[in-house]
Length: 197
Image 1: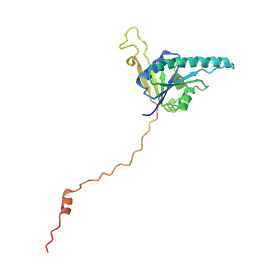
Image 2: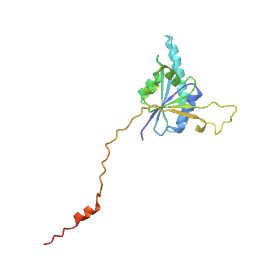
Image 3: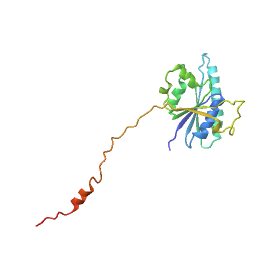
Image 4: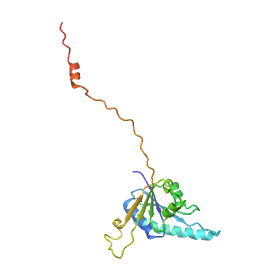
């Protein structure tokens, strides 16, 4: 069984926590590594103290996500907290750097996927893994929630699979040989010829 590295985007929204819980229930296998990835905003000020405070808050947020992971047995968790770059591509760069096979994102109004799609025309070229975007629908006051609260049946799951389509190499076609082309010819050959002497 391959050990997969699954990156989960850590944000201070309920959608991100829901996405992590969904991934823990439905995707994570024994031995998989969960990388909690938090990218704090780029600071405009030259004060290192502000960047330090943002990094500390991000690490504390990632630790709260790690507490969710600790409720599940046999989970290996890594935490990465880093500063966003000017282009808004830091999450993409970190996912490539850690070699993640899957990225789990909680979809919300300010999700980085939306902002990335606004800036870059084809975001499919940037990722080298599957991106799973989990969206929990808002509770409507008119329709009651069906199912058990917290179960994965209550979530709207949308998957953005942007891995490139690869056509496997096809071996040359097999040449069909007939095993027994003419049964009478074989029987005829096996008979001893009766020659008149």
